[in-house]
Amino acid sequence: MYSYLYNSPIGLLKIKANENGILEISIVKDKFDNKYAEKYSDKTNNENNIINKCKQELDEYFAGKRTTFDVPIIYTGTEFQNKVWKEINKIPFGKEISYKELAKRIKKPSAIRAAANAVGKNKILILIPCHRILGSDKSLTGFSAGIENKKYLLDLEGIEYV
Image (cartoon, rainbow, N blue to C red; front, side, top):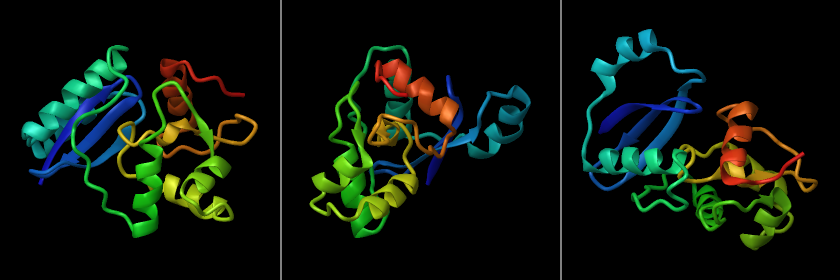
């Protein structure tokens, strides 16, 4: 297992990977704190080619130079969660859908709540763009990295919300 603390505009992210792909991107701290990074970086920064590629792609994304990701992802959820996450990955940069639309797309139109729960369990922030899921009225809904960070990502992609 490899891991790296990545300083992003939305905060300190922990990237975990193995030799085959990204396993997790989670927010560790909302605002970057050098003391925090210094405290944990020696213990967690253990990079491989997958993490290096991910860091490069995230740099490009946050700089507005990348709209898709090529780094391999490893889906580690239930069959249903993986289906939801793979469908979320089909939402293009700058577009959004509702939870209701997501449930329709996975051919489970009555499973809106279950789809929403799967979205909330996404372990790979940004690469699996759960921030692109909004309420039916384009309202902001929960986000594991915080609503302010969701707003930042939506604004970065030019997605309108209320």
